[in-house]
Image (cartoon, rainbow, N blue to C red; front, side):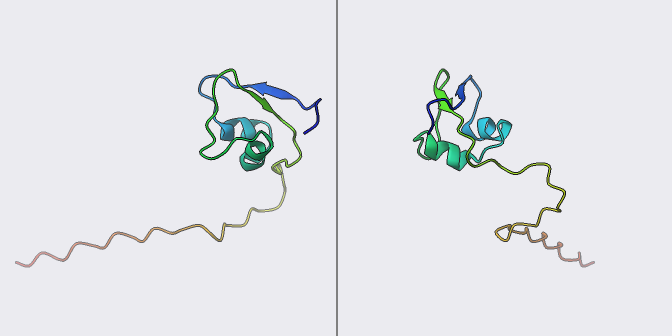
Length: 84
């Protein structure tokens, strides 16, 4: 990581994901570059270097495609009709 990369000082309530999102980065790449292992625990006052080599593409005019790993939720079955 370059020595002149911008640095972010972690504040209370920050998550690695929120820091990455605000800076247009992928949180997994940010974690890897800062040697932060899962579950990606960070602490107030910690310095996170923002390299920016793997920006998340935003503002694209193309329509996002649904994830192939998305799961669907089956509808709840209807209760049986009441017999009189």
